[in-house]
Picture 1: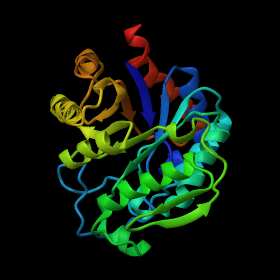
Picture 2 (picture 1 turned 60 degrees about the vertical axis):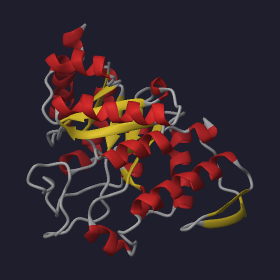
Picture 3 (picture 1 turned 180 degrees about the horizontal axis):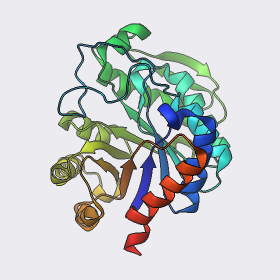
Picture 4 (picture 1 turned 90 degrees about the vertical axis):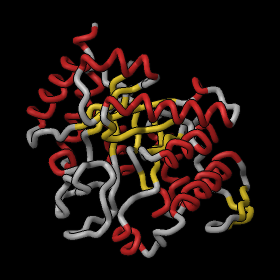
Length: 289
């Protein structure tokens, strides 16, 4: 099983010297992929419930630095040469799909084909309101945005007519190095999100899922693959469990998880951050060798 690291872009992990230290150390010590999530907006008080914690609150303070994930990963790409890069996740319905298509392709080219686009539908109504995007219908908007982006990645000139996006005979370059095959993984732990991953994605990213619930989520993916006559082994599965220890790795692999993602916050010093990554590698990667 591959091991990824979700540690960039927030708080001390938003500082350029720490990003560089974490990225280079992660590559050196055998992590497969660097993940970076997104929130354009946080608010001090919110009625929206955060879906990835028991108390419904996000642990990140509203005044914390939170970098744009595509820019943060571009910086990490320049500091590395082998490790893969992924948004975990970009809140796609908040964005213009024509712009995201160009940004994702640009990052794929600059990283020599190491980029994976992870997307989600979002959960904060307050964030959507601040951006002037309707909260209702965000699932449909996400699915249409993906279709429009794949059109832009594979056709030149490209035309698309949908409920939310329309363009005619436009050229958006560069293209991803893998063309329309730029991998897209879909985040979210609900059954709707899981079925969306099969219908519209190349994989699923489960964030903060209890270990005991991972097989149940994967069973939904397998059921949807069978319903759609899609080969289950074509779907990549990355999971950041909320309560995993290294002893859980064999069971997670047997359940179908291809990548275990370690989530953490690096210390503020670059040297300490590099040492921290090395310690995570000893725990999660090298202890199995």
